[in-house]
Length: 633
Image (cartoon, rainbow, N blue to C red; front, side):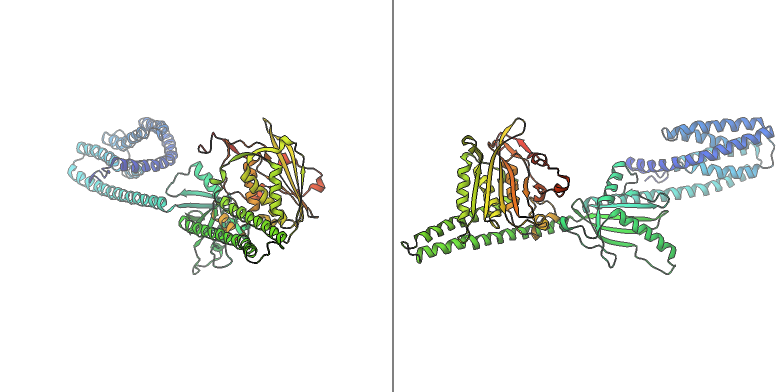
């Protein structure tokens, strides 16, 4: 910083400082213009009454210059400063000149001179230090020159004028120096805060409550004094969609980190309503509390916004309106640790499920093998041995299918997407699957019926045989848990434009209905946030329905499956698959999909309204992108 002019050596910093001063000066000048207008009107009327035409001409001329210069306040501020300087200097010189040359005789020159000085300082204080010094130097030199012409005791007048002027200049110098240092401290503080905001993901909001309009108003965001529309929109979104939870004691929030989004409705509150409560409570406390009462002005807690978790601090501060400062910090470190913990739980659950597969299917098969090898009479017990071998085959198939479900659940957007398309007969495929399932449980007798409405040509399909079998295994094992009789209906249909052949598959079964709680407890496909991970970690790893939905989405034209349940337990499952699956079509990746969103359940008002919704209207085409091969995908 220059020692005498107090200008910063760095041009960018000086420009920032002058820019701030310019904004303040424009605000002051917009208010001053009304004083100038009133003053000009008053002096004009007085001079007309006193018939002082020279003074009237001078006042009117300067008044018109001031009014004309107002059009340059914002756009050409330097031009406005020039006009204002001209008026101030001429006004300070006019009355001494009229006295010295005896144009006007007045006994109030001393009083007028004092108030002219006060008014001059009020006007020029909005200018920079250097500009103010130049104006004072011009006025000082002019007045001293007039004193040299007319005053006998010139040196005495010069010394007094120099001393008084030096006092004011010293005040200007110290004030400007203090302002410059304050600006530098503000600049350092702003730079430091910006670094903190960037490194720690902290956001700050200063909000006022306007009692007249009963609205919450954003005053400042971080270090930004100017509030743009985008910032206001984002803040309104925070107010309306950010959720907080408060405990009943100590004024703190209950931790909602990683809560299950499905069961997260208890004691949630919008940030907007909570702030209104704080403002209104603060007003009541302010009216009733005594000087000796101390209140807690700070609240710490946690919040959730669009499945992102934040630490929140709300602090009451003193301002011209009821004011709170909101500090938000995204809990990235805590979220990452919680994610790792939940993913480890899911990995452990997958390992436990794999262990159960070996325990209940593979181990039983080994026991049967051991009995056949060591103890069975090969001649007399041949029928029982064959039944055991069929059961072993069913157990191994079930174990392999369950294990494949676990693999696919964890690779839903990678390995699961690959397709190996073959041409085969769907009826033969179904008969093979049914034989396996019938012999799966040696103590259970299940009857399967196939109603085939396909002709010979329609039975031959081009599909991903491996995943079609996995789909049938999942659904048939699912219905066979509770049903003794299962009917499978296959019907030819047409889909889309251009039309493509599809097969409508309907599985009728008997069994208890799945409750809403059971449906909500299904595993979320490819969870993306803590709430979804927590949901999966707390619910059973039953993958038959979720993986069936994903396979239907992949090998069929729709991304939904109908699950019809009624009070008589006469239920059915209905879905569609392509007769010819094209290899160069692949699904777009799936994220955060709850199976309940892909299930079409029975309409609640179907008996009252007697309006049946078409299956095609309920279904949506599976989202696909066209690729030449899997590597392109």
